Length: 145
Image (cartoon, rainbow, N blue to C red; front, top):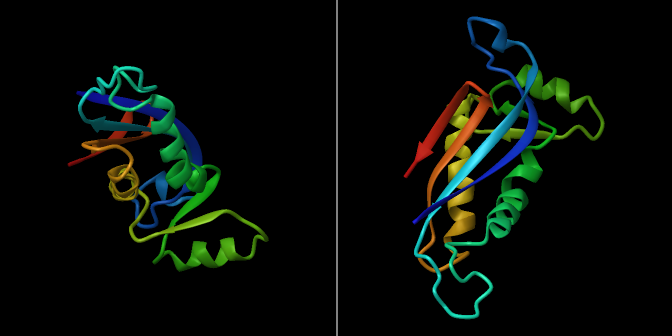
């Protein structure tokens, strides 16, 4: 059985070498969909009976390890020294330094890496299958197992 939980967050970024507008500092209302697979819990009397995992727990884990860090942050590539230096001049600015340019594809891959580790021990047999990052309502990237 597969289940999916959707969460949203706001973040800024830039694609330094982009040929068009995305090379400038800007932001998005991102959405992330987290798809997990597992067996339906049939233990009588269990709070999760009939579920793969309680959707509120899916949200809690994703919020704790990813969404709270990325929400209202500027997502910057570690090699983008000009922007990193600029952001460092802003006292208390929320900056997340990433190993790759923060495209939708790279954000999906990074989110998958982070969430895969977080959900691995959450429930026996539970497995992260897909992370979908919407950069806009019409553009998204999928990282799949």
